[in-house]
Image (tube, rainbow, N blue to C red):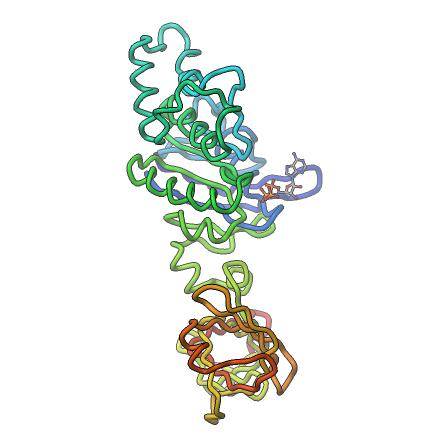
Length: 357
Ligand code: ATP
């Protein structure tokens, strides 16, 4: 089922949590709502679910206006951060619950329910645990059961609010991979809320980036990471070095660093913000002239295959983060307090509208 959010706004007392949002989610897509705390992710999810009415705008499922429909009539399944499983029911009974409580006319037979639960247990790889109670499960297992329970009633849309938020980093990572796999096998239109950039980049088909109740960008993980629409997105999606400077006559000037303006910057003279990912910076031991700046190594973190360096520019005392491979780090024999030369291999230029001359 496709979902269309059209001109949706929501105000609580005097605070506007969502500003005229527009969004189209295709059938079978796994979409992440990503943004900092308070950006409106949960409010948007609740409006899609029918748990909260929008002040303006509509929620359209498969071309049909569902704004006035109840949650039940929208056929959505939910999974929340705190797996609200029934404590006094086994795993099997928890999954079967939604089917058992259907009105007599719509209730499947006992045998059909048993089969459906078995299928779901297999899908979430929990067959052996059918007779356990929630207290006898790990957090990750409980969350998988919560998902199976949500799927049991055959929802057309699955809505997940920080489904792995309460779990530790390792389990989160396993479950992420698992959710992606599950979605490939069982491609139900799904929307999940997360404030974890890595989670969204790892799992989602597309990411909706929210900030202060507005959509900053919508795109595939690659699109939003490689071509962020503005400094907020760039900053939010991973480490980045931000420099203020000027663009003129096809050149970008960032302090003493002069670079050819990248093609996407267009032409014109303007004050600009330039952003450079730490892994897009090359380190040299010798000054190779134009396009390089001198910096002093301030801090080195050499755990794992990627080495993170923090350096201080000698021309203006700004800090720069750089990421290099362990091999490069070893071959250059870098040490704290050493002076080196840096050159951006790739960088983006953002021209704030107010500044264009
Ligand atoms: P988090 O990641 O912290 O859960 P979020 O992005 O999901 O944040 P929302 O829960 O959607 O954000 O909240 C958006 C804004 O709306 C917040 O400033 C919040 O305080 C406000 N808000 C949400 N629900 C209500 C409510 N029922 N009454 C008043 N304000 C609310």
